[in-house]
Image 1 (cartoon, one colour):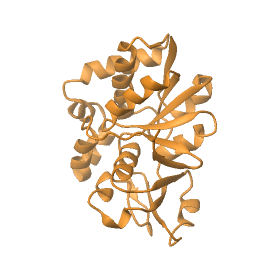
Image 2 (tube, rainbow, N blue to C red):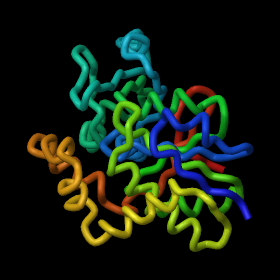
Image 3 (cartoon, rainbow, N blue to C red):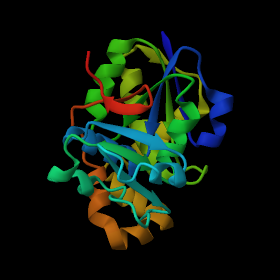
Image 4 (cartoon, rainbow, N blue to C red):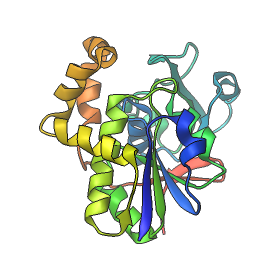
Length: 240
């Protein structure tokens, strides 16, 4: 059987990385959700950067638009925010490459991109991602982007949900407290995950006053069928 591990914050990754593995990067509110939506709505590719300054050098570059945020707010001078809604029903993004930077998600990608096959996870594409992982038959590490290198609820809950489904296939096993913690939290809140997050996370509850509808959208399950994969410096939709 293959191994599954959950890294609850990027700072822990050097201690938990697996050999010959797939890393699923998770940033539910909102980067990995936005990446899935963007690539499902006609964006050609996404080039993730840890640095806002490096991302900005792509502004007005032919074929590119730039998107980004810090602390949840759109960066000044950028074309797009880190919002799934920015890429819905938006003809301007179709066929474009997006240079993208975020507070947490693109930092996590930068951390692992040279170590393993990297794919993107969200509640929106959870079913498609699970089917894809089953086909790959490899060790899997679920990397929660967290909040500024600390653990957060939303990423941990998704990791717990996906890990539970993976283990039920009998293709993966674990001996990890992180996996058990994530699955325990998921099962505690599974009846209404968003309400559970609002109850537990003062940070998210406060931000919901501004973008609560986006948070609701980010918790929708299985409405997308794409699996974004990192190849040659870009996130693209996986195709055989």
